[in-house]
Image (cartoon, rainbow, N blue to C red; front, side):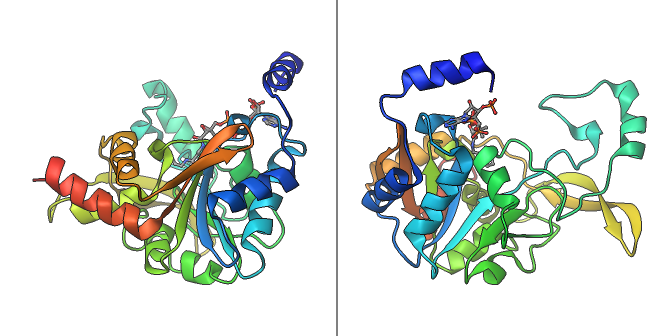
Length: 273
Ligand SMILES: CC(C)(COP(=O)(O)OP(=O)(O)OC[C@H]1O[C@@H](n2cnc3c(N)ncnc32)[C@H](O)[C@@H]1OP(=O)(O)O)[C@@H](O)C(=O)NCCC(=O)NCCS
C-alpha cells in the first residue's frame, strides 16, 4: 500500500479496529469456541486494523479457542498450464518458455494467488498445515486439521475429495469477512453435486514434484459461470446466515451444510434441470 493509500484508509476509518475489538465483533456475530470455520477475507474491507493480517488471525483464533479449527483457502492458480490462463491471458509466444520455466508446486513454499493478505499471512503462520493440491489447496490449524486437509484429491479438487466437502461432513461453518458469496468456495462442492453425470470438466495440468522429478500432472476441475453472489443472496433471504459488522466491514456466518444443500438444490432447479 502506498503512503497515499494508507492516508486515505486512515481518513476513511472512524475508529481503528484491533485484535480485541475484532474478536468481540466476531463473537457478537456468533463465532463461538470449538467452531470449525472456513474464512474468506478482505483486509481493506474492515477499515484500518492495528496490526493488519496478524490482528485478524489473532481475533479469529481467539474467538474459536483451542478446541476450534480455522481454515482458509490457499489457492495458487498460477501453477497451471498458461495456455488455459484467462484472467489475464498471456501472449501465445510466451507459452513454451513459461511451461519450461514454471517451478513445481511446493506445498511449503508456493505463494497463494488472489487469496488476500490475511490468507497468505495465515498460510505462513507457525503450526498451520496446507493440503497438497497445486491449485486449490486449503490451510488450517486446530484439532480438525487432518480431517479437513488429509487426502485432498488432485482430481476435482473442489469436489467430494476437497477440504470444503470435509467441512460439510464436520458440520462446520463459513465466515465471509468483508467479502461476498462470490468468493465462497464451498459452493463448488454444490456445483459438483448438481451437474448431471458426465458433465464436462476443464482439463488442467500442473507442475509438481513426483519421485524427485518435476512433471506435469493432469487433473480436472469444474469450470462453470454460476453467479455465486446471486445464489448467496437467495440463501441469505431464507434467514439462514447471520450478518453483522466486523470492524468497518460486514461479515456473514453460515453453516457449510445449509449453504451447500441450498446451492445444490438451487442449481438443480435453475441451471442443470
Ligand atoms: C482479492 C481480495 C483479497 C482483495 O482484498 P483487499 O482487501 O483489497 O486485499 P487484502 O485482503 O490482500 O489486504 C491488503 C490490502 O489491505 C489494505 N491494508 C493494508 N494495511 C491495512 C491495515 N492495517 N488495515 C486495513 N487495511 C489494510 C491495503 O489496501 C492493502 O492493499 P495493498 O496490498 O495493495 O497495499 C478480496 O477481495 C477477496 O476476494 N478475498 C477473498 C479471497 C478468497 O477467499 N477467494 C476464494 C476463491 S475465489
